Image (cartoon, rainbow, N blue to C red):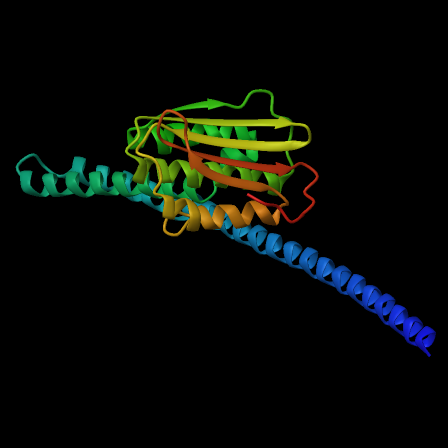
Length: 253
């Protein structure tokens, strides 16, 4: 009798092991499906950003250029004695020119054409000029000899650098920032350092209010690792590493 009980118990344990293994396989498959779906959502968002950027540049931008030209013609056609009207036309032309510049800047921030045309290194150097230095932060780029990257991976790396540098400009009170990009041992690594006031501990833990949480989750969806930490010597450091093969795995910070 005891032998039968022992046999039954062994069979039950073996069945539980089998069911547990099958459950783990289903969970892993579901996780992979979720990662693929989430990456597809981000891809659709980037496609929409690209379309909006093109519409701003080719549609509204061209209309503003034409309007600026017509306002200049109107100003020049007014006789000298209509000084007030000429001044108003000049003001309108200046406002139109400012709006045109802001529209072009918004178009580039939505989806910089240089990222698609020339790749990640050129896009990072553009980002340093337009976002970093324009915000009063001297930004240095180290991104030599990057290989041609898959589109989603290239976009991910640029968005991580863009969000990190945006936080530096807006919140860090930094004078200097460094962006490094390299490929090593099958991983693309992005690091953004600054010499500012550093991040509060609660921001490091939660990422709330600084875009850190969004960066972390997006990197994880590509099987990568993400970390925000104090920088030795002062300031903060954002680090992201993503496998070149794009396999999504559960990653820890």
